[in-house]
Length: 131
Length: 131
DNA sequence: TCTTAGATTTAGAATTAATCTAATTAAAAC
DNA sequence: GTTTTAATTAGATTAATTCTAAATCTAAGA
Image 1 (cartoon, rainbow over the protein chains, first blue to last red):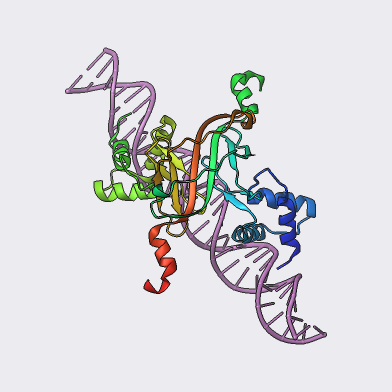
Image 2: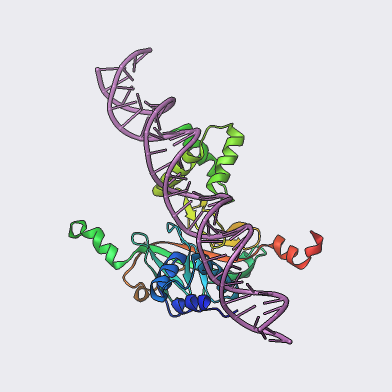
């Protein structure tokens, strides 16, 4: 059903590559649209969008919150273990499990996450004093 | 430091391919060894093992708890979206990001997760009445 | 073997993301 | 406009994980 709240969430996520948490979405919308949505509705809407395949939910090791990605085309993620920044990567190949390794599973989706340090945090590590 | 509690956790994880949660580890040890360890120590020990590279922590979309895998050699995971079962898969190739796509990241680890239905849950879906 | 300093364990409290509940409000069908 | 159904919401609830501070162990040196 079309509601202002759902439109707000949809609009906020459209072309958003920051992989926000539910609370970040809530905070951003609340600031911009002056309180048109509650946190519960953000969760409800994300759950709905997920069911419809409009958003991917990302659970990432070492990050405490679920993150949401409106880009549902195949891609991997680079995650900074220091600042938590997440960026998209389009891999120039597809990763598929050979049939004989599937152990009877019917595979329907996949996540590929790479962990490391982003450029900014690499610098910080080299020059801690520069902070 | 060598303690009975840490040994318990280590032994429980050795060759364990069930990807248990912290609580599952705690429950299993408590039952077998009759209370030699507290839940806090299980968490402490897992955190230590993680730091030492003896265990991998898995955050998996749709599963609410972190899971632990003592198999730290490169491999992917198949995850059943219905019952939550996780099994290891050794891929016959390595997945690496081309240098020009790394966006300055220093990559140190990776997770590859495939989501779908395990054989048992595929059957359940076909024959719901057979339940 | 005894002592002791430092590390480990622990119960229970605290934190907090996410879910649930039940009442209010809004949407859309007619 | 009325009615029916779905959506929103504040606040309570749940539960994984972390924190705290006190008690207990470990291991190495005397």
